[in-house]
Length: 247
Image (cartoon, rainbow, N blue to C red; front, side):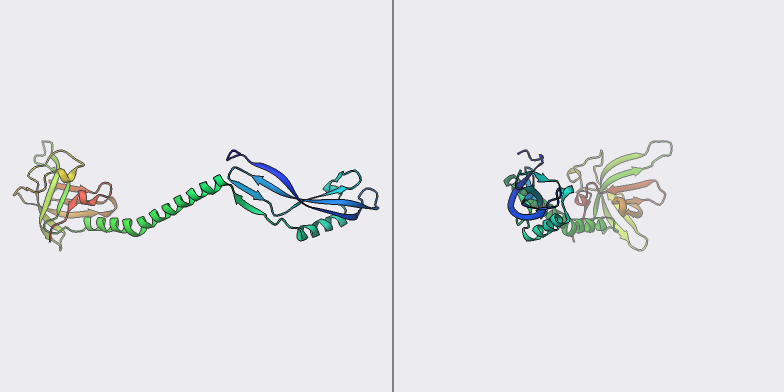
């Protein structure tokens, strides 16, 4: 059976015979009462309804008596039969394909829950701590990879380059720091750890340390606004944009 096809049928499970007043000529006649369970099937699930289907037949001509013609006696008898002869196997049962698919789905859900738990309790806190550390006032020896912007002459384009800087002095009282730039700065690269970060120039640059935690970015801006360094974490790879000093 195709997985998404729905089929319904009735399965007979009980037959009773009893005297009832006929709804047609008001005299007692022998009737046959059949109880059926309704089965709904797909390729994945078989659902057997809890309430049975009850049908009354005349024993003489095997003609079904429509429900709209049932007498109060027949209706009361039907309610009693429902209680006395319930559908014992009512409920849902999975086919072999259904059991396989739901098992795979269950494993997938479990794996997803484990992954979410890992992110919530391990990766996310670690990532948060890394960003908190990135945007805090640096220590002597810390190195950042970022964008260097220097205005040399108002009439000329500014000097623009990417590379590493190294912190050589900090002042927590006013959040200022001094740094030197890499001896080799140039074009932007995403292989930041491959860029030169062992040799630095001797020229000290001083500026105000400014942090923006929401954008995972820090800036060091000189007092005259002519020199600015920006570093921003990309893809949560904090270790590609800051190398902590060795203590």
